[in-house]
Length: 206
Image 1 (cartoon, rainbow, N blue to C red):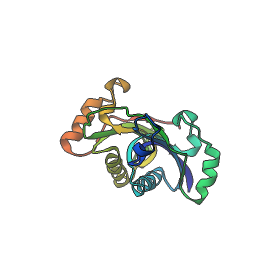
Image 2 (cartoon, one colour; image 1 turned 90 degrees about the vertical axis):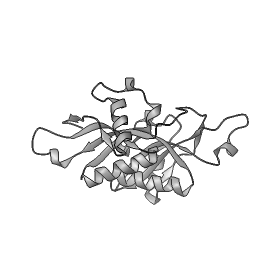
Image 3 (tube, helix red, strand yellow; image 1 turned 45 degrees about the vertical axis):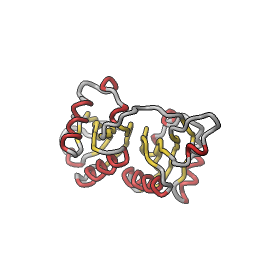
Image 4 (tube, rainbow, N blue to C red; image 1 turned 180 degrees about the vertical axis):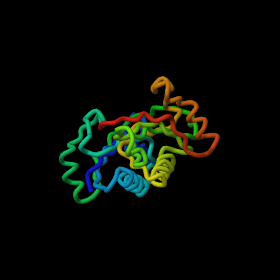
């Protein structure tokens, strides 16, 4: 097993009660560190932790091997070395950093994420180290993530990193390359009630 990081936003039902006087609660930002055999396993474990705390996942900004963690991935105080040491005994996280409401007022019912994956079926031809794609799936960010993890597992594709898991209404087409038509991918996921993927950007070196 190796350590993975997951930088996320969640909604805690107790948050409005605990919010600073005069403040409006929108959610909490936390950085989790967890030892697991794969990123998919780490994400699944954190989803269970959140559910056990009666919290709701709002967004995952970045997730991947802790060796690839950068300070920009979590813009709050975080002693990553200390978290890694504590994670030897089980999943750990930073304290919750509350923020005020932001994002889309109207939900689309489809969530999106950028997936960095490794597909063994691509081996043997041109040099190949992985590929990056924009994915969409129906439901909340948590529901969409579970769908996408199931698709990857069924396809024997390994998830290397994940970025920007969120409600698609929070995203703008201008954020993505022309080869990743956000609105078309979201529409396809909504119409088919299943996952949809952009063309993949294949790369040959990590």
